[in-house]
Amino acid sequence: MFDLTFFITRAVQQGIPLLYGSTGETLTEKSGNLNLGIPGVMYVGAMSGVIGAFFYEQSAKGALNPVLAVLIPLLSCLFGSLCMGLIYSVLTVSLRANQNVTGLALTTFGVGFGNFFGGALIKLAGSDVPSIALSATSACFKRSLPFASKLGWFGQVFLSYSFLAYAAVIISLLVAYVLKRTRIGLHLRAVGENPATADAAGISVGRYKYWATCIGSMIAGLGGIYYVMDYASGVWSNDGFGDRGWLAIALVIFTIWRPNVGVLASFLFGGLYILHMYIPSGMNLATKELYKMIPYIVTLVVLVVTSMRNKRENLPPQSLGLSYFREER
Image (cartoon, rainbow, N blue to C red; front, side, top):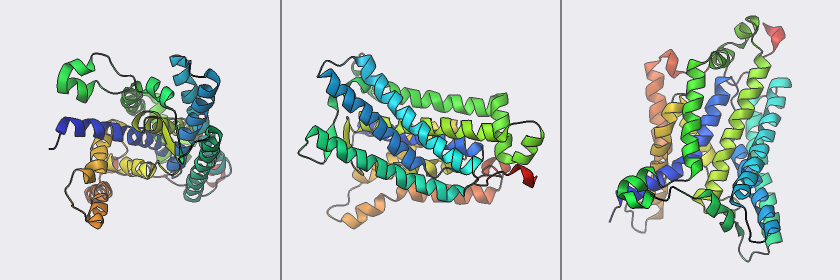
């Protein structure tokens, strides 16, 4: 029997990593940088957090401090994601390398980084299976409001999530406010639309690109640590992250570069991502694989519709994917 309350809960949990990834990528793209390395950034963020959690659990020997058990993986995640953002910025902003090639290279590097250190940690842990479980740390991340279970379906749908889930919504709304309502957001959008004009107006193009890319990468990295510590209950498996990074990039197009719209859109994508599990398909595995294409088909339809409308507010930044060279003004 189909349980709508459980489905909505799982859709939200599935959508949180997508929300982190799409929010970070939207902020990055608003500066004119097209970072196709977001899947790698999320992978490195997740792996960095796992490394921090693993060594803290090993040193604590079961007596975990809940604050440190959350803080150490979070800081490790943010540091790893920041390094990825810096690498991308140095190559594309300072050295003016091709953004598409750089992004794809970072994705390949990020996946390799995660698999290499993931395999190393599995050997250190002496695990009999190709995965590592950080259940003690995960329990600290997954704590929810104690009274949520007493409020029935309302508590399960709205109040049963961990702090990182609510942080994702808050960060997304905050980024939307900054982009739309503040001077910093105005300058950032100017850099993304026409960096030469912004430079002539006294706006530091390179600084804004660096900040937007690095902060966007750190936000995206939080999606990786959320997936491992919350959604996967602290279990790390190589190549277990799936295509969520690419789906987050697709979500940027789906939301028309609006982080506030991304809140509901990510939950919708989360539902579409797991919908194949609830559609009867019998033993026909080919049909079930086709159902997995639903989120991408929806994205293509939205892209076609928005392109036909041809409104300026529905289009990406004009300089998206183009490196800025001051002497070419």
